[in-house]
Structures are given as C-alpha cells and as structure tokens.
Image (cartoon, rainbow, N blue to C red; front, side, top):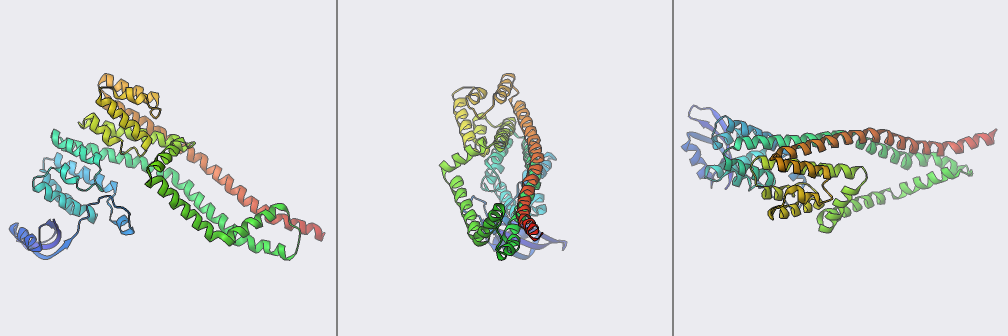
Length: 408
C-alpha cells in the first residue's frame, strides 16, 4: 500500500505533518478529512522493505536503519506499552519523533498493518532488513504471553549490551589501526618520493655504494615504477579473497576455520561467538521461546559456520531428548567449563541465568584480552616503524660517511 506524507490543518487551524497509508491520493485525502484533518499538501513517498539485496549501493548505505535506532525505538515502545497505552496508540508518537526517514516510513506501514488486525510480530517480519528473526520471535513470544512490554525491554537491553561490547572493541582497536595506516603511508612516501631524490646524488657521483643502500634503492625503484600495479594487485586480491571467502560455501567454512585458528585473534573470535550464543539463547529462553526454536535462531547469529553446525547438531540431539550440555560437550568448539556451567543450570532449573553468567564471563575476558593486546601492539608497532625508518636513515647516511672519509 502506498505511503503519503502530508502537511495539513486541523479544525482549529493548527499546522500538522505526518504519514498516512492509503490506496490512492483520493483515499488518503478522504481518510484525513474523516479525522477532521484537512490536507494542504499531499505527496507519495516510498517504503523499501529492506530485504537483503544482491548488492549495496552508496545510497543504500545512507538509507539503512542502524541497530542503535532500532534499540531506541524498541525501548520507547516498551515504555509506552508499559504505561498502559494500546499498541496502535503507542506506535503513533514513535512515527512522529523518529528522525530516520526509512524507519519512519516503515513504522507507518507497521502501524497500518496492526490497525488492520495483524499482529506486531507478523507486521515487522515483512522488514527483515531492519528486524532480525531473533527480534521477530521475541516479539511473537511477548504477544503470546501478554508481556510484550517486558520482552521489548529485554530486547532493548540485549541490543544495548551488544552495541556496548562492539563499541569497546572498536575503540580499543582504533588507535593501533590508525598508527598502522599513518605509519604505512609515511614509509611509502619516504621510499617512493624522498629516497630516490637523495640516492640520485650517489648515482651521479659513480661511487661504490654499501649493500644496504643498494637494497634500499632497489626497493625504492620498484615501488616508484610499479606502485600503481601493486595497488591494483592488492585491491584485486582483496576482492578475489572476499568473494571466495564470503560468496562460496567452501570458502566460508575455510575462512571461519581460519578465524578460529589464528593466533591471538582466534581465541577472541571464539570467545565472542560463544558469548553471543549464550546471551542470545538466554534472552530467548527467558522470554518464553521454546528451546528448539531458540537454537534455530541462535545458530544464524553466531557468525561462524563451524559453531553454527555444532548448534544445529545440538538442536537435533535436544529434539531426540538429550540435554543441551551433553550434546555441546561432544563438540570441541565449546570449552568444558562452559558446558559444565550449562549442565549445572539445567539441573538446577536456572539455565537462563547460567547462560547469562557464561556470557558475562566470556565478554569480560574478551575486553581484558583486547586491552592487553592493544597495550602490546602499540609498542611493537612503534618498534617496527622505528626499525624501518632507522633502516632508511642508515642506508642514506652510510654513503655520506664514506664520502667524508675519502675527502679526508
């Protein structure tokens, strides 16, 4: 159904703005007049259903809805429902105060569908680019249990927790990455543009040069002559590896295995995936989602096919009557301490709380490991950059020292 943006006046002459769904412009005007709103300007806008596209353009990047915006909207909706407002009445102020045009139009469509008798879960499931299967199933459970506001609060808490962890990781890695990029740029500039001008003086004097200087001149000449080809090769290799590791099933398995086996970073990736599994499963179970449904959702968000296969196998075993901890313990991807804590939760009837404890413990380890790694990376990177710059300086100064000795 088309969406129309309008500017209108009410019966008191007050100016209004808003969005309305209707089959046509005429139908939109009629619906507004029935509510004593008289349109001054009415134009059609378009709602993209945010289905996963084959490729993203630059415009798609600016149109997308961020996780933070969805989290804020979720908490606001939970607050309004908790205050006793009906669902449709709660959606109305959300539409007016949402600043993202894409989310505003999507909420208008959702409100229209809910007003027509659809459930909120069914309505938001039509926009998988904004609302994940995890989100939809949580909402569906909240509607079925009559505690939608509580479930939405849990959803907002979960989303904010994940964003906070990602923010800490990005903040910790920002400085080392910045140092690497700046240092690489400086070294490339020195080697490609500065060194040839200085070493050109030596070649004009026909002086026998030290081996280290000859090596530097060779590197400099190679980079200066073929830097464009090197850049193209690097970009082409990146695109090729990206396609192989993200677009092919075999490549995805290889890449996910590499991520788990890489020294230092492999351990972090593993802990983050298991922490995401534990927190998401705990949130789903606490909200009343059945175990099998929860496992089918969780396996799609761990972002690792090897771990996802282990969860799928666990789901089949649980369906046959086995305990979750027993089937996870057979997988080498879930450490014994984790499966023992899950087993204790199953036996005591506090599986959800135990999953939260597992997640909290792993996330704390991830944060401390990242802090330790970044504190080690900074001096190592400074040392490497210092050695490379020192190599360039010595390579240039050695011939100059030899010239001074000859003059004496």
